[in-house]
Amino acid sequence: MSIKENLDKIEEDLRESNVILVAVSKTKSIKDIQKVYDLGIRDFGENKVQEFVSKEPNLPEDIRWHFIGHLQRNKVKYIVGKVELIHSLDGVKLLQELEKHYKAKNLTANVLIQINIGCEENKTGIYLENLEELIEACELCTNVKVKGLMSVIPIGDEKSCRNYFRKMKYIFQDLKNKKFTNISMDILSMGMTHDYGVAVEEGSTLVRIGEGIFGKRNYNNK
Image (cartoon, rainbow, N blue to C red):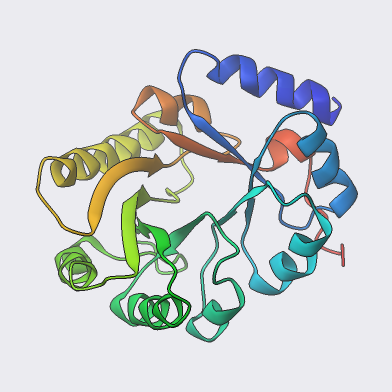
């Protein structure tokens, strides 16, 4: 199927849900990203800083960029003022680095807290037992605003996926019912190419789809 056919199917699936679609463009060429842009998509996700900064100047200015990968503290300075939303806040040290760099430029970093809901050692994201500490640190910030939660769930069957999505929705709703200064639960970012349908059924407000739009990734792309 072509990119247009892929996108048409996904948009039809999401038509009645009001869910934000982020086209995950990692490893994809500027030409392919432009093609998806020309089909009406404005939200794109990248997961490596070096790749993002090489693409961003060569694409339309009205793209809303989402940084969805693990963000190293020494790379924060390169994305300040360039991304709409950082999906991968996973610890107090990264929070402090974001606060420092965004405060220096008098800008606000809009972020999602990434939760490692499956407690997988090979994945980033904060464990639930450390979430309260991070939330308390977020409340002390002036230039970082938490807009919701994100998760990459363990690979599994539909029942397993649904279970993890429900756990995330419960945490999201629990935080939404509390009063914070710098934290609002507006976005629940969960669901990718192979499980976005289940994610939407379980309360996702934003899905991150790469292969489902662009086709298989080419990790040799420069």
